[in-house]
Image (cartoon, rainbow, N blue to C red):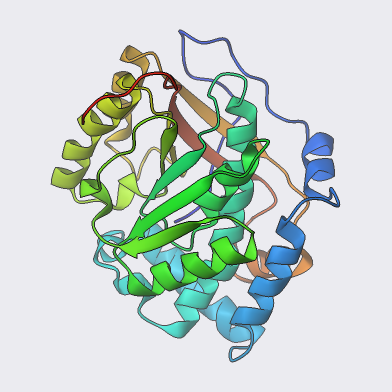
Amino acid sequence: MGHSASGRSGTPSCEAMPLYSRAATAAATLDRHDPFPSFFDALEARHRRELSFQEIRRALQALSSLYVERREKMASGSALDGAGKRAAFALYYGPLHFLLVREIARALAPWQKAPRRLLDLGCGTGTSGAAWAHAGATPATVAGIDSSGWAVAEARWTLRELGVSGEVTRGDAAAAPLPRPPGGVLAAFTVNELPDEARTRLLPRLLRAAADGAPVLVVEPISRRVSPWWPEWAAAFRAAGGREDDWRFRPALPGTLALLGKAAGLDARDVTGRSLALPGETDRGGPR
């Protein structure tokens, strides 16, 4: 959950990649072919049917506090146990995740080929998987998996609304079978929420998937303080030929999204995050 990125490439083995300029990012967001504005309008209508702006704002403040200060509740799922917090997550964090992951995928595109099929581990409301699916010339098919029944239903709605083909199921993201090429693997705002044991088991599986040819992308908030596991993962990705990047950009936000963040004391103007990526090769396969 959360959004993040910083502005430099941290991978010594790769050429540093410049970030999008603010003007270029805003122009991309306002493109008439961009599905995001109409998606956000539908999302707002969906979640403000029964909840007022003030109710969602209060829930967002509570959700943000849980995310920053009491992360153990995030892994248990109790952070999304009320309608207000669910609406706040879907209406605030979900759209920011879409914008961030889409920009990361577009920026990495010269180096990491967009997959035709995508497994979205811990898909949440489905926005991150839909973002990577839309980053290529032809939208990818998405298979999402999440432990929350509410998130599964919300992700199915998200994929339909954004015109992305695929299916979402309820299950253990850390144990899901990983795809062969031309499939890819996305873990966006997921790895940090896993129990330590599950996270430890997932890392070698992702490295093996990439060695077998599947592109892999991991996205997390930029704060190192809440992710003590990050240096180990970053070193493993770099050793396998991958890259580590920090990102920061300033998109043109829908009015309600910007106002909701401001009212809750959050600054959504700069969308930030960090990523680990492995390019994969689409002409190889093999068992996991």
